[in-house]
Image (cartoon, rainbow, N blue to C red; front, side, top):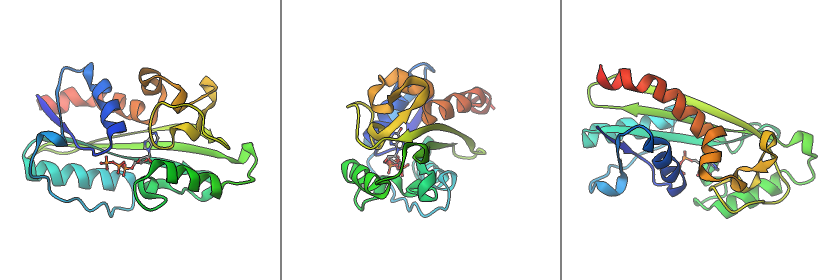
Length: 197
Ligand code: ITT
């Protein structure tokens, strides 16, 4: 019962390690494999990109693969950064991405700073139909960073029900309400059947 969590993002890897801990699967990461094919993330949606990552790797490595494509969708920016969240400011640099986001929202009042995180998960296994799930979390983009936990845009993402940013939550608190936690629980409802089919 081995599944490769196919991400180069240490923040995601940490969250999946905790989320999957409960399910008794042996979780592998990209570090456990030597020849990893290049993946071109040129899809137009989160799910298309997650599918590309999962399919490319399960074809090449012959194992079950879970891929996550996720990002921050800001209403006042017509959905940006969206599928471009990781490289919004050029290289994958969380601090630069957050600065760019703040600059683009400068002067905008709180009620117009609505946004959501989205997570699409695709699981593939050689010779099987894929399994897909997704989740969203709604919040507001603050005018300055708060909190030291999480990763990516978490310090700017204020979650009204808990009156905290995602970076102020513990890992398990974040997993309870996050787009990734919601997507993972939706996935797991279907996973056992799919796995045993
Ligand atoms: P992999 O493709 O290797 O998994 P990646 O970081 O490039 O890693 P994505 O293309 O899915 O993955 O981009 C996701 C970006 O969206 C991520 O780098 C963050 O900037 C942002 N993001 C996604 N989930 C987040 C979360 O829970 N908290 C904060 N930012 C998040």
